[in-house]
Image (cartoon, rainbow, N blue to C red):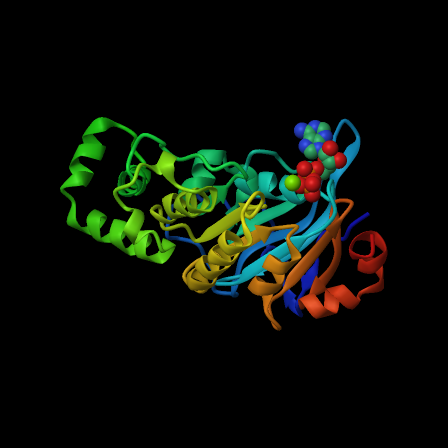
Amino acid sequence: MHKLEIVHDGQAGPNASGSVTGLGHVARAGEIDVSHGTILYLDAVTVSFDGFKALNGLTLSVDQGELRCVIGPNGAGKTTMMDVVTGKTRPTTGKVFLGQTMDLARMDEPAIARAGIGRKFQKPTVFSHHPVWENLELAMNTRKDWWAALRARFDRPAQRRVEEVLSMLHLESEAYRLAGDLSHGQKQRLEIGMLLMQQPRLLLLDEPVAGMTDHETMELAGLLARLKGSCSIVVVEHDMDFVAELAGDTGRVTVMAEGSVLADGTLAAVRANEAVIESYLGR
Ligand SMILES: Nc1ncnc2c1ncn2[C@@H]1O[C@H](COP(=O)(O)OP(=O)(O)O)[C@@H](O)[C@H]1O
Ligand SMILES: [Mg+2]
């Protein structure tokens, strides 16, 4: 079986020196302890569905501010990994930590979202009948009641944030269009913008370029590059041109297969890895 304490990158994991039980930490936004440079840490995570292991001893860590690409064949467990991080699925065994102290395996989905993890699903879900700017404004209100929404309208910092995000998305010229009239790629960017309104610390994107044109794909790569440093990003993607654009020569790419990490390193390194060639890229 897997070791309980795993050392990665020459550094002890968050729980190497203490037990998880008894931490009793109450998660609050803005309190993520990244003093060791790690924002997300999964240690020997297993998820069993009726005996089938969708994740099988998955260990990986993501640095604060990093843009990490995760690739791997269908069924490798990439989406399940995101489900575990966001609290949609509980790990059967193993540890999932945000920073040094937040035990995600003990938090529910809303608490994990409040702690600063934003997730984008494959299909864009925007408010089609509202203008683009209003989609962003609505996304800013964690309290979904009309009074908060009304007040936000007169809130200057909120307006500035909407403008900032519009510019980040390269959607300034579309601000007054109905979200439903945007192209698929623009909708995908808008939805990322809606997540950004909550100022997430970690953004999870599952196959964001599916169905996009080449131009839209490169626009999204540009957006993620602009976000780099301000929030950490984990992106699962099959499109290797997109991955190459994001990873560049030095970015870290994790290859998953059969529920665990098959290889990890620069894109060039994982492409040259024998196990990867056999199980995935060579097919
Ligand atoms: N809720 C579930 N119940 C049973 N099996 C599941 C469930 N979710 C995922 N799986 C299985 O776990 C494996 C990994 O799935 P998934 O995480 O979606 O892979 P990926 O995103 O890498 O394609 C697949 O074989 C899938 O069929
Ligand atoms: Mg998937």
